[in-house]
Amino acid sequence: MYRKILFPIKFEEFSLDVLSCVLNFKKAGLTEIVLLHVIDVSKLPMDKYEGYHPDDIKRFTALAEAKMDEAVGMIAKAALRVKKLVEVGVPYREILRVAEEEKVSLIVSGKQKKGVLGEIFIGSNTDKVIRYGRVPVYVPKYPAAFGADKELCERICARLFTRVFYPTDWSDCATNALRYLKGLKAAGIEEVVVAHVMDEKAMGLQPAEKVKELQKIDREKLQKVQEDLEKGGLKVTTRLHIGKPSADLIRIAQQEDASLIVMGSHGKGYVEGILWGSVSRNVVEYSDRPVLLIKGLNV
Image (cartoon, rainbow, N blue to C red; front, side, top):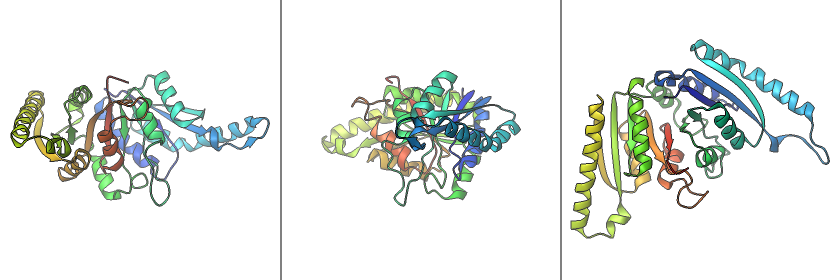
């Protein structure tokens, strides 16, 4: 399913830790990793009249290729093919261009911590890769990228596919994510936790009898998903709550000790080019669990 993965590398403190976790996708069919380093054109020394100098590009390219050697060694040791690329440009644009040209099946896009307040997610490279891309995105969580405990990150990485959390809102995007989830069974999934959170604000506008009726409908939908997954030989637990979707999904993932969250994304969303799904965006931003985001059908 994930035979070819694009791994953009920035040589940050936890880059190799994240890569070691990505190697677990070998269980999901991984055979090749494309290592990509993008020399950010906005950070190059610029001449007032001539732009950036070719010698600077050569120097930064040679440095990046040398820094990739340890990562290349890790990938080769895992008996996987590896391709090294160094490009110059706007990072997220180069990542998406290379992903399309290389026909990858997954992009790894971590969150860089910025300053004492952390990253403002909207407008980041990861946000843009998810918003404008067309392939699934894996967002790892490591201390330098999120603030999670290193021991927790390592434990989750070691059991990446064992306990998968699947939130659903019954949309086509969620159904698409479910299809991908089924394809991960061979990677060693032991249990799937399926959850739906009914928005408390929306429910607050309904009479009590209507809320009970909607709960009954959602339980039936959860039962159908459970039966579908159990037919494929998976152990399934379901959760239904009334609350705040983003916050409750993050809390449930922690309570269930999920090793991976698999969920759908609405691509560009209902406000063209701005929103790719507030719930999925918030889960990616604030959960301490890695997220495998499956792009919707409307990108």
